[in-house]
Image (tube, rainbow, N blue to C red):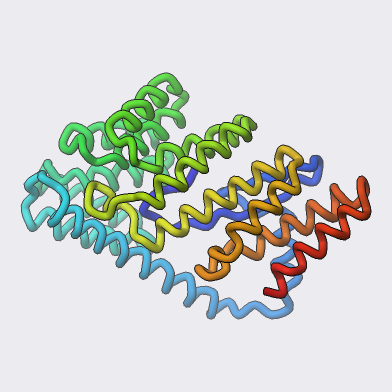
Length: 310
């Protein structure tokens, strides 16, 4: 699942045993592994430098959003020492996660009201330590301290889902929707859940709602978990999921038409996954459409090639 606050890549992979296209955030499919292998020269040091720059930018972004949460949004009083320890912990998110955890524990020891420190302890247990049961305890503590922080509900429902308590997960999601009707993350996660269940129609509807919510997202309420750049990234990720839903239902023309409408914005914003979408459309057209209708294949190919030329 998409992990809010942390910028993650979502990659496309192809299932060679069916006509469907799937997305995973766990592994790169054989198709794109081959694409990587086709590259003649890879400047490893350059890639490391680029990744480090991205990580540092993400850390700076989270720190600034956290400061805004502490100083402008939250009504919870937290002492400055606890805040500073928390902000220091975030610096180690990529380089030393155990040190980050230790600093987070120190932060809540300094002030038991530091709900952001509890939130990141939950994040650590859920995503970095594979311990969703402990994550549940931390997220529940966040809600107890600050019931107006929506991300705690969002991640709590995910944690319940991971431990197999779907009833409680659904209960939390409904509460999240009731308390924060404008919060887009609920609908985004629902879109992913429906896609996993192969209910692609419901998935598309949920992603469309999420996109609308993201676009109307207030910058002044409790939404400090998301910067404007990351918001645009999530919108485009949702659009990517919609395209794959159309491909999963063998509705190639809808996928192509939808992509035509979102392509200009994706290109303008230099969406990193844009080439993968084009290659997915090319591959589907080649593997599925070509053998069934050669004329339609040629028409589609012309449309797709225009994206590469623009």
